[in-house]
Image (cartoon, rainbow, N blue to C red):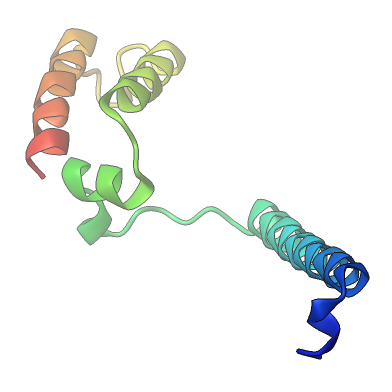
Amino acid sequence: MDQLFKQSDFVDFMSMQCREKELLDYERRIRALQAAKATLASSPVYALSKSQRRAARLCQAYDWSEEEVAQMIEVFLKQNPGGENGRNNSAIASGVSRLGQALFLG
């Protein structure tokens, strides 16, 4: 093979072979990710464990930014005005600043 690499046609041929191999590898990864996504979508949703119920830990695990968390909280508050325990929305919203601090300190 090393002798053939002295020929430019063989170099071009092998370059194409390498590219095809990379494309096949990406296709394999895409199929695996699509299968994993389908499995996740069809699986039941489980409640967060007690160890996951910490803002800093959860945000770090899912790589959520402060802006993403603020948007999620906003959506939650719109969907659940007053909350199930009759909580004050402003008290919940004020926790966003503490959550931001936890994100950057954690």
